[in-house]
Picture (spheres, rainbow, N blue to C red):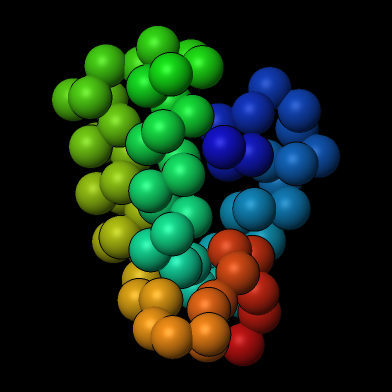
Length: 75
């Protein structure tokens, strides 16, 4: 959500994480869709576009067992 934030500092930080080779967990993507649809009332088609863009620029890490990757973690 920070990438879409009007808070320039938060959006900038996310962009820096992406440039540094950040990865994102699938659970974070699920949470994004939940917040986008319920809180922001973003149409599903727009959520899909955002997810497609994220998946093009960041590897998605599946959540398995107790091992989870938090969005924004740097390699």
